[in-house]
Image 1: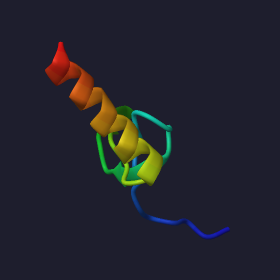
Image 2: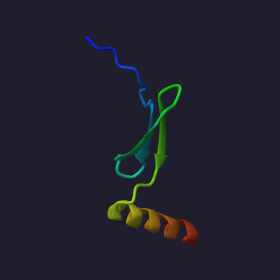
Image 3: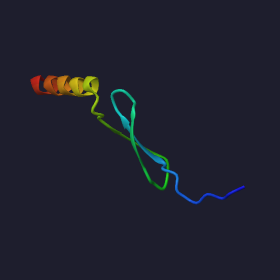
Image 4: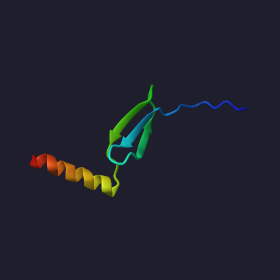
Length: 56
């Protein structure tokens, strides 16, 4: 059996609205970051939420 040398990306960036995996990061421990993806539905939802915050 062949030994493979490499790293495993333990960090993940997930969309905070739909949960889609956006990217992975090489981290020392399991880490999850949340951000916004660029899917139309998520962008629209983010814009609507910002508008509500400004109205309050």
